[in-house]
Length: 117
Image (cartoon, rainbow, N blue to C red; front, top):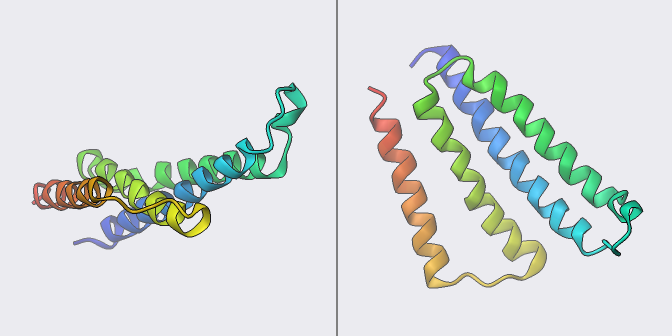
């Protein structure tokens, strides 16, 4: 594995974490929406959008040094982080269906990664 590929994998991995925090702040900010256009100018929504934008920038730099077909599925790891943050910050339950979905996501990412050889 080349240093450039390792860098790309790390950038995409970090982007998935940052993007998942974007979802958390969008959720927090959505609770403050009051039906007016100015309701969108709350700090949580703005931070959520900024985190999504930041994760997209990291993702763009990440895919530069690797195979898109291998790196793009790593973005789905954001679903795993989001599930964890949802439990931690919003007390959402872990259900059997969510755990099964997580296992399938991880399995898919592993298989796609193995297919890069």
